[in-house]
Image (tube, rainbow, N blue to C red; front, side):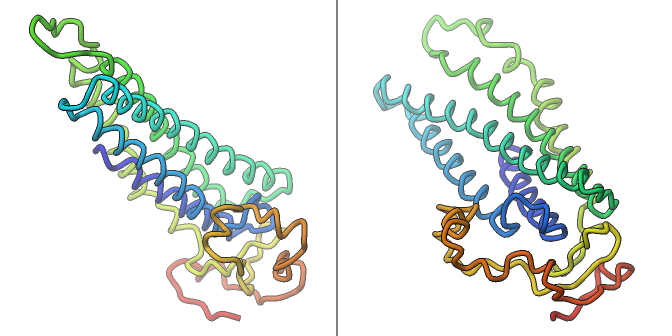
Length: 257
């Protein structure tokens, strides 16, 4: 279960990106930048975690080097909370814009609530991991060590079964029961009109920039300032596209325009 969290988070990044493609005019960020931006940040966090683990587990290192390892792991755990909160904030900002605009389509709301539930479970699991690690990071094993000094959250396995295994199992079961793919269109060029009912197949939300540019500037601030590369923005206002059959959106391949 230890590695389930980053995999589930990557899945959620992908799902939110697809949701933003579905209602692009309310998206705070280019839909394609959700996975690359948050995936890149999560990669850095996981690298810190692995780096710290290699130091803290190596008993041949000096005490100061082992302390550096513990500090890196603590930092990565806290950063996981920050990344999760930023991601949820992005989703809530988008959702709020949709509500204000009167868009309450269930094909949009159901994937969002699945996403919220998944991230809440992941956040609860991360908090458990933080409490667990901070309670044992300062322990030093050796002659005369008293096991009774170990925190109950580590000594008793039921904490792990409840706050780690059960939470991630619930997450996996939920996605098998109500995966967002049941509601979102297969083709990410299909988007929901501002009327909240009609689906249109448009040209797609493109980003002509290179990958490294999207990682450094996911919100395309340079493009907003210079106007360069913004020609395809707001394609939903230009009359491009054609009506999509909403009854055949899921599981049916549609033709591009």
